[in-house]
Amino acid sequence: MKKICPGPVRYKYRVFVWTKRIGIRGKEIMRNLSQHTGTGRRHRRATGRFFLFLAVTLLIIAGIFLLYRAFPFEISRAAGEEMAPAAGETQTLKQIIPAGSGATVIVDPGHGDTDVGTKGVSTGRLEKEVNLEIALKLRNVLEGKGYTVIMTRESDEPIAAADEPDAKVRKAADMAKREEIIRTANADVFVSVHQNFFEQGAGAAGPQVFYRDREAPGYELAQYVQRALNEQLGIANPRDVNSGDYQLLRPGNQASIIVECGFFSNPEEEQKLQKDDYQQAVAQAVGSGIETYLFEKNS
Image (cartoon, rainbow, N blue to C red; front, side, top):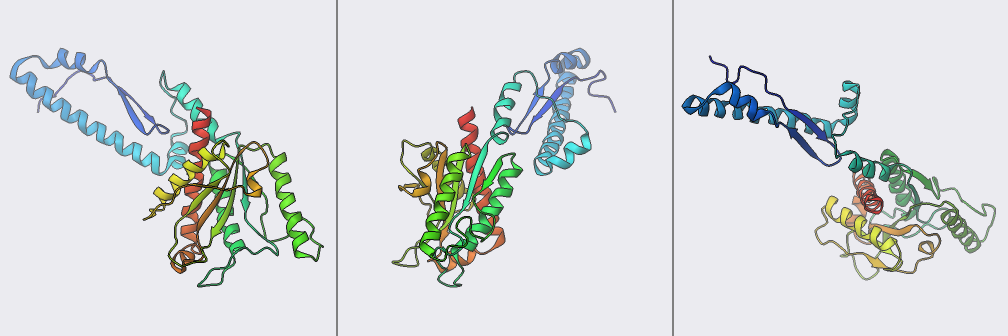
């Protein structure tokens, strides 16, 4: 069997994980090919074989790329080194990496202690419990992306006025403490996790994100998070963002939103919100929206 090209064929490739593409640099390919294959019918046959070989090579590279996307840590560790960006790509990577490093996010599990929030219509589960479960998952997602996360609470223990017997006074102290955390944290993002409830019927469903007003930075953040929730959770009848002058959206200069993960007044959705895998999906979607917002902000 004759070789398609007896001489070496030189080309380079780079896998750009962040931009989801493969770059092939092969300016010497045709020059090498023309030197070794000649002209006429033999040339055309050799050229066809060569491009078949090149197509197979590209498929192999694409397979490696997909494996890297699925298992980036394992492959990077096995390789023992990171692939350096090609000329012209450095600035792009520098813009993307800081989105997950150096930014601070406050995660607020809504309600807590004596303030239980709403109750599920089918299970009677307390909103404060589900809020905390999703918020803790969101913390893990965000920390996995490189963010610094500040939690307003990590358990159901009171965060202020623990010895106060009056529930209203205790609630006021709780809210004041959360406001203090928001004002002093110098964070980039504040997100409060809640569950919705519609008194007039069980048909309302789907997550919804609230912001204070369109002039506040939370409006843009709300758009990104709402889009991520609708798309990643596969919401049949997606909701749009909405505004509200809520107490915890006022303090600080960061982008602030409230995420209503679903409706506790909808029996089917309430039960879904109890499941660990769905809670994780909600947390992943909120984390994706925050990541997109910070990337666009820092670009």
